[in-house]
Length: 395
Image: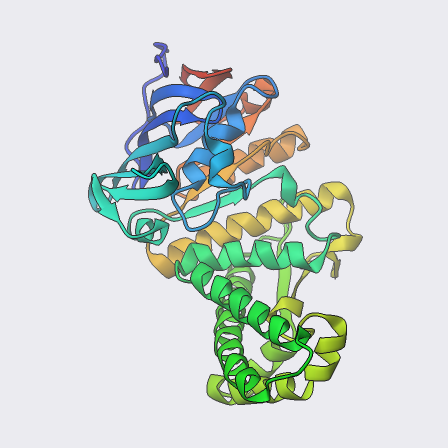
């Protein structure tokens, strides 16, 4: 349970943006039950590795479309030995008042399990409905190799950026994947049905252009915000971001409907090539998010490990600001093991920057000393297996 410990520091003033004031878990991961009141703006979760710190962030990340920050199947989130599913509930306070959001995995009458979503205890159609109340931005150690890794990892990272400002983006990406798989199956048949391929390729083209346009708009807006707010003296260097791909290039010079016609022709002409390859070679699935270290004007992948980490943090902070600007909702920010590899100067600068976002920020770290520089209004919790205990407000 989240038993508060009295401290000599006055609790913080209420936040202006949406923020979690209570987190309730039931049979989620390592938590049989947790009822945690929260009042801090910067929330630090500290404890040994494996204690369950990231599990708390993952629970919060379920209030957005998708499978959360670990990208795990919902069934994996049920506590080992639990008889049923799991439940996660949060109480929010914000400019629009109070609300309660809930999600989880419930057993149906036939014994199957299904995800359920609720807003103020009333059923919601899907996690996309939470977007009216809450937006989320996160950064985990899984992103540390983003700039030097595969293009697919950067596309998934970009889609998460888009989803934070456009809650329907995930549905479009899923529709594109389904349509592309249908085309690939048709191409694998011994005898091609060109009329059916025409119909499927029309669907592929429509969804592909919609996905590419959403990605391109987000990248352009992010680049413009970074250019307008960049600070050459910041320990978190600004990033030069761009989206590369043939459809993205055409969207820069042609209306979307014309690009759909063009891409549909590319698909038709490329049937035998894609048939031989066993997949669709041209499209949004081949685009890449290109990132450069702005102050040094070098590819992000060429920067040092420390520089890449600082660049990634700066990019996520810029994204949080973009979400606020585009949606009018200051996002909840989740940062897993964020301070582990930062020197003391960068840690202090990070906390000052986060405090200036106006967002509630949840952070984890195994080393409690890494949070010693938290500003006033912060709250620290000690996490042990199945338990979270408030250590009060700092500094």
